[in-house]
Length: 268
Image 1 (tube, rainbow, N blue to C red):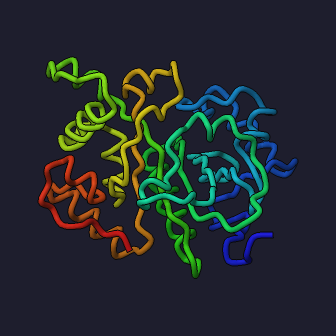
Image 2: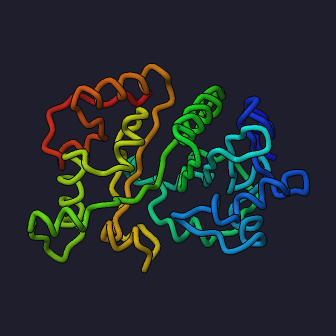
């Protein structure tokens, strides 16, 4: 079993529910596979797929949390829990392939997970996604040894920006990442604005990361971004203020690509 301090209660607050693959949550399961409330970014096939690949119990690799209003799902977030692999830099430990996450069945983890990855967020009411992610940040970071909190997010308009500006790109990973960093420096991406407006900083740009053949894969040239959420409320608020003031909080290796002299983001 995982240490007690990482176990999450089925209900995190009066409105935030850990959706488990049991009969008690059948009414939520039906909503999450419905035409109105299914995951549009990474579609769920059917109920069997939802139960096997998206849901889990505390201590499992896949957990889904829902913001509820009575019996209605207002927003849902799918998370992937993993143990950091050995790497030269911390950013290299972050999950960088969404296909691997999507195709891996939920399973019990043999040790404490060090990374929680938000890989898909759906909101069905104004502000639902923001409320849900803020509540989860508060819940996850109250543990004595809180995990790394990161997203694996698409770049929605990268290809359109490149075509519009006529920017030339060589057929290399470095050229693609450089173009993505330049694009992020303009604050044009809607997913970036959501996460950085919530206090996250750019932790890494991942090439060949998106699910091949999807619209997000084509629009983002296969690239995805890890937006890191700092553990402390103070760092989160500092990043929010910096982003509103025009800065782009980012890890040091990303700031060099942005050609930025901005101070280090809040990371504590």
